[in-house]
Length: 349
Image (cartoon, rainbow, N blue to C red):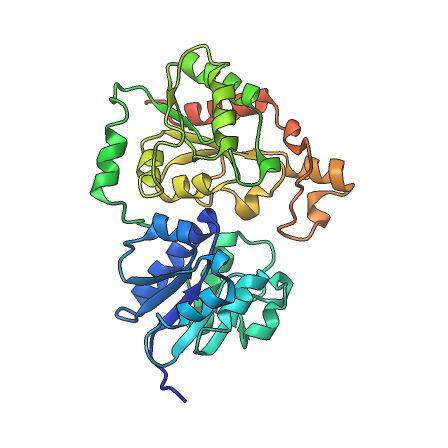
């Protein structure tokens, strides 16, 4: 039997919002156990976002490589066994991947959050605490190690070149910036172009600058073009022009980011930017911006009643209400009201 080292292995592949939620756990572990080697099995996109995080050795895994890729990944681990594997993803592929990680302790989710045979791949579980935010559930993975996450901090270690790129995109003329990141990878969580445009027009009438950002997919390009076509004043279109390394720096330049439940929502929150979150398909108390949800629109309970016939309080924690037209529940007036809450709270004097 290979000797056991004091190193820890984290397994969380995706998505961008969830890997962002893992960073405070990394900070907690580093503070409580300085010098303990940390290894993180992550997907390619998450690696592009977080590469360079101090004190972490990343092991990127491409799901397209299947079991052969899992075997190849194992060869990149240090000799011996990890003290513990923190298996923070319950999807079947991630569970199978975890079997290739040599570790004495295999810490996974509580039974309520387990699925896809998760329990067969672990030998310890985090505490069962229903009704908590995803980030707090991930933070619970430190507790079997005798460590309690008492402080949440990110410090994404954004490289200076990314900050310089973001600063070069527009000249700061004193106007606050409403940044719109209009798309989630879950299409049914997305709002509508005419409604984004209506809030953007309201913001420009109030003296704000509007900036659009997003990825390179056809969906994001089409949505952004539809928004731009309905604006009274031209917006700065940065959709598809940034990299994942530049995205955090870009989001940090905004006063307020308007977005559905998405990776940019959580990256913006990690950078200290306030978020106007649009929630009907998902529960903002579970997966909304962790630090501040005052500027979110919450129609999750209404969605549960309309599409599932029961109040949100009777749904399993974390249940999604991803139906066609669910985001119709969020009106332009509610988006503008959320914007105005921010304006009121941050008015000078």
